[in-house]
Length: 188
Image (cartoon, rainbow, N blue to C red):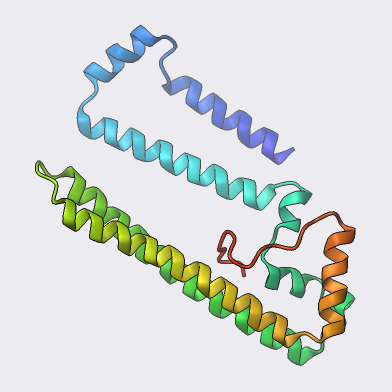
């Protein structure tokens, strides 16, 4: 219901500001200063990002089953029979990964801003752009590796019986176990 209301609200907002026909759109582009056009593009991107976060927050049951592994383990702590010490260690792993993920995301955004700045100059220094792109990809790879390490450390906290029980519960719900390097999430 919330998703339907949010989608309707967004559609109404966009219908007021979006021109109805192609000809009107062309007139609109010609009469709008470049700064306003750039601001409009940033607003559209922000709305898309916001929509993605809403989908994550209010998504269907499927999205809750695709939760990060450590968060799933903590959610099912009673079912798995985790000891207080195990819960504490898993929470520490999750929190540590969240901190690292937040730092990594901030660094990535800064690198992307640097790339945009380099591309906006009249003559693009391809070498500098390439260096920044490689830096952005290294940050992404570092986060994937950190996620794999966090998951493996979390698995080491569990007993063999708990690991089997968790794996079986994922299969019985029809969810596949998340692959270790897939979609690094700050919720780990």
